[in-house]
Length: 101
Image (cartoon, rainbow, N blue to C red; front, side, top):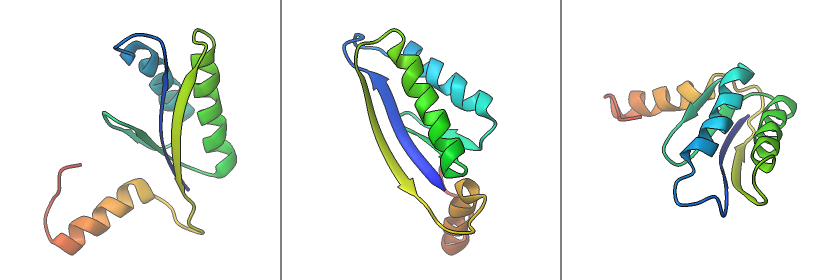
């Protein structure tokens, strides 16, 4: 499954990149395939392992923040693997060119 989510503390000031860096550290150390961008992060894996990482991120931010905001979108496709890269490759093949990712 793929889970795309954005998570950040509210009330922590205008810039929250330090807090977001703590979240990315958890995701990176999880060993799960992921891609991050300026607005969200995508993680690939099985439900239990992905949701455990998402919960670790939530708990980490709650250690020092009273309120945490999260938006989560899921795509759960049976027997699909390597979708983070596979979906992009499929688009490139259909367009017959590279795209900006």
